[in-house]
Length: 80
Image 1: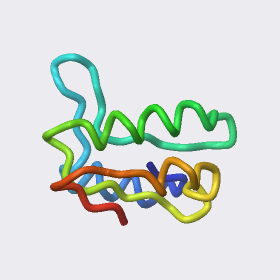
Image 2: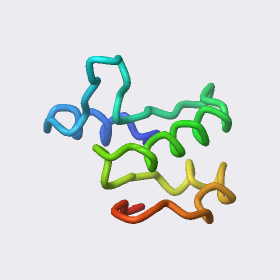
Image 3: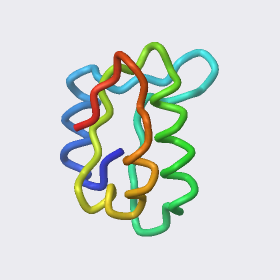
């Protein structure tokens, strides 16, 4: 979940970003029009997925949803 276009572009060019056969991406680009609900739902989806081990969130994005970040992210996930 990143707001910085350069960060997302670098990760995607590096092969980290993926859209699977079900059209689900393992990344979310947050801009000024992204709702807090979308951020929360995507975060919850990421921590439930077994193919996602690290969730990287820019600080200003995390400030939108401190409550969700305070919850349990489960075993096997790292939140940066």
